[in-house]
Length: 234
Image (cartoon, rainbow, N blue to C red; front, side, top):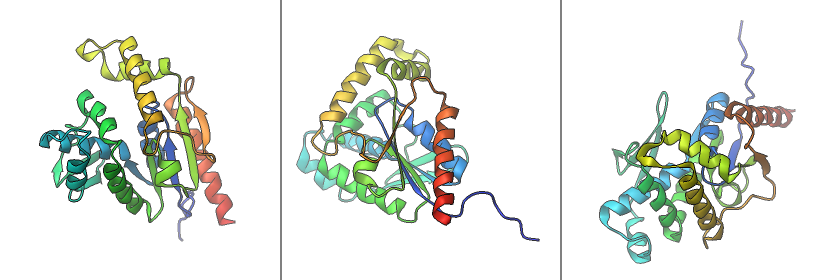
């Protein structure tokens, strides 16, 4: 007797965009796990670039140096049992890129057209075989404009600051108010940058998670993905 899986055979690409602190990465990772898809953490890729440039002493405004360095930089995302390892030129930098300094620098280097062009090329290659959940700030509008499912996940600045504060456990004396200022500044920077600014794709579903749990958000996206797969198989 042959056992059949209840999981839909049709595979989609799912784009999840939204501002800083909205929980995109957590949601995307859990959605991918639930569906048996591959999670692509685009934010980690930009952080890796920031770490690389920082090590070399290249200023975010030095367009020529950034352009030259991006020609050969290699970034890989390796799925492990409980996390995703980030390799920069073959070296594991998973922990090194998760610092406040790298987080701030990542947004600065992301304004570079050379950085974005190189990483978008890599990201599209990763999604070519379908079955990918990718989160970022311009996935549905620029990286994967043909993704079968697009979501714009957001929350109030206050709620996003509270979440960041909870994650930090108050390390370095950071306060909710400080996180609010940083998030508001990051929003402005992302929304006004010249290259692929943060905006909701016209065909994306807006999902305000201010009063939702992570499990609630994941369930909404997974249920819709399964429904879309079943409709596509008919």
